[in-house]
Length: 99
Image (tube, rainbow, N blue to C red; front, top):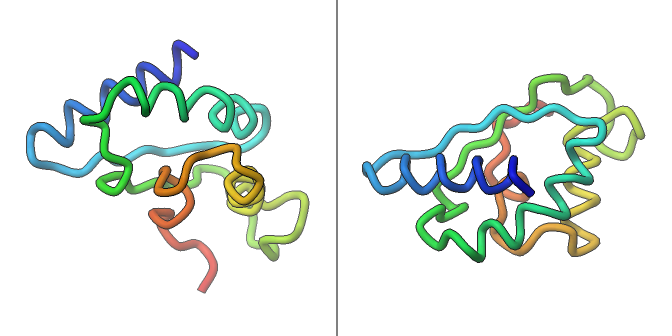
């Protein structure tokens, strides 16, 4: 929960200064942790405005999104299952990897 709070605080600061918040994410256990902890952290920090986030994947593999090795696929599956709220980073604001 502390990591999600730190991320949303940094996002709120970036957005408040009129900018965009850019975040690099890896896969693995971070996917489940953020799916669990980011929604309440975003609710507690309304200034973090997820529509102003741009998320880049730091370890994405060039495989189909359905492949278990796809980091983007893992984040999208979590979002589709309700693990992240609508409009959360990662659902629409991923820096595209797949053409």
